[in-house]
Image (cartoon, rainbow, N blue to C red; front, side, top):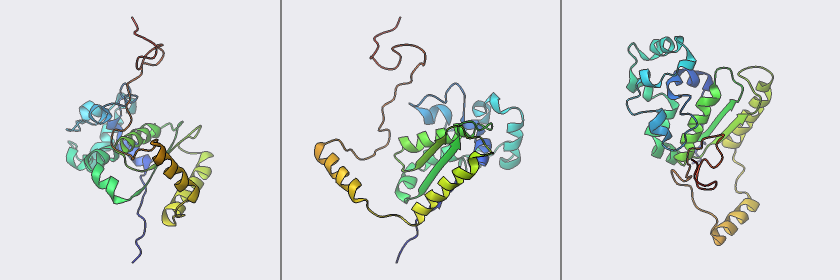
Length: 208
């Protein structure tokens, strides 16, 4: 019996609004402890909702998730908290995940996409991620981006099979000790204070 690969499409137009509470401007560049800083366990909207989305954002959420917002219902449907709460299940499920956004999207969709990408990466969940340079929410970038999306579907539904050159390279990396299997929180990251020479580690020495 042949099993079909699973395809998951995340509609980022909806996710950026329904997930507006997950992004705080002063925290979005912080990688270490991202899950606890940006998506606290109680998912309190008065803490999470950033001013950048304006006064209408809460009304949008309440129309869909209740007034007051049913945080358990919201959390079960919010992409970042889905990753946090179900990392093991997602990692073992064999899902084909694509996260894609334009970096000039006026709806700030790229912030939601970047957050979910970082959570997937730190959870060691395989996925494909594209941040498209110069792409907006609509306009001329959409046709070429759709080509990329359909290409992803094609590869997921009809896998190309093993790549002999890649397999040889992997075997060589294992023999040399370069290769290590993916594990959660594999990448050590210290928050960098941009614009300060020497910030982020000891490379530049201690700053006054």
